[in-house]
Length: 496
Image (tube, rainbow, N blue to C red; front, side):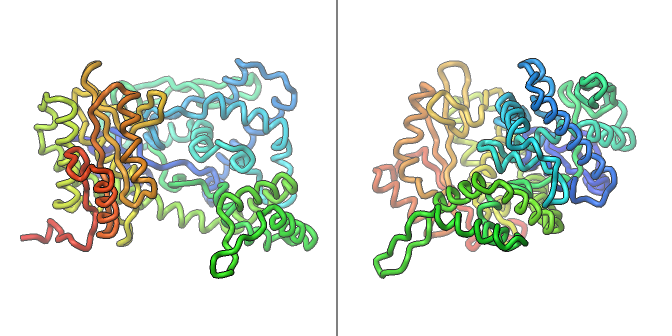
């Protein structure tokens, strides 16, 4: 089964590595994002040029916002972009079709560029403007919105980067000429231009490679979580004594009065209280954001090392380790020939996953540097790959109005099965098991569901099984436990 760029285009992974690109999956997006800070902080001249071009375009948008002459058509043309799905990066529901930075992001950008973000290019504290500042001001604007927006603005670079590689290493028979829209912006006419490229093609669409040194995982270097977690460090970096004292005083005054524990000691403030106090500081002293950004600039070298580690983690999990899993899948041809019900097909795949993880070294995909990385999403990606080339319809995070379910497997209107993955360590496991899938079954008009519980320790397993016993579900066939412990495994490669 061919899944990765190297497989499909018959290019050695080492060649892609030497070129500096990430060996993407062409079955499902991988959880990586473009971080614009890596452009700013790079010593490469072409990256620095890209960062300046991004700021130039944002300045153009800011000027249009201040003019208040942007109608819905121009809002969609200038501020709203489709997702560049051809990179096969990010989090899509299935395959590589995500939402992209849509109209809500466009409106938020328009409003803020004409308001609190209007002076983004007038720097007195930090060295450069940063688009990520919008995430710090506006709720619900996150890494994926910023990454998608920036990817659109550097799309011309990615197209040329991929074309250069493809002409040198890819069989010409697997290339095709494409006229790509929204490549370069013409400031004379205020319009996007289209450009022709010769690119690798899959399913009649082109594929884009992305340099690894532009990518990160989990969050951009400048992000709201760090702003909260590093509040005291940032305040300490403020050179103005008066402002520093005001920031500390206002933060403390916006925290609830300390509560006492039973032993008389003070309770630590809740995370939500800290977030609220930091938000209050930002509203009162918006210049605090510039000091945060300067702090991140001053620690820019860490951004490079952190992103490299995170990208390597994704490569190890979803390319290196998972390729062995995929090889085993390709040998299980019954998966692609089975014409049973969606319940039996889904159950068989869950049991196959269980066997691979517990008995065939598959558990290793959940470990980084010997420590467990507990993410339901890792297991979901593995499960999704078991349906490659299946005639059944597989919908990830299907939502029928009562909340998303991990997977809905359907064959026509009357044969549907829901599959949910849960970590045994989930603090809401009892609530999830008792109510969640039952709600989903009603919403999706099906009485068939499978619940999969992944555990990493004996304690987690015992807790989860006690929950099942208390709920009267101990003998439920379609609740499946998967053991991801590593201390009770003998590597399949070493077993005799």
